[in-house]
Image (cartoon, rainbow, N blue to C red):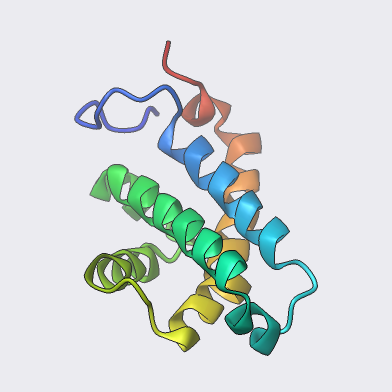
Length: 125
């Protein structure tokens, strides 16, 4: 199965974009406690940017894909995207939840899907 044909032409699949941004989130926040993360303006800003890339990529995927991949918290990504779109400064708890749960859980499932459905991760040329 391919990702939706209605998605804009991309050089990278939404799945790969989510993986890359998610890996960046984990790298940026590795070993940080919540207070350290919130105190670091630069780390927080870049993490926020990467989370926004993840949420935008997640929303490029069709509802049919979301229904097939029920293990991923698509509603969580939609809510995060809405919150990040309406504020330059997302709520601390929401960002930390995305860093510690939403992004890592999504990455774990994307790795499973990459193994079982490699065609979803093929790049557009």
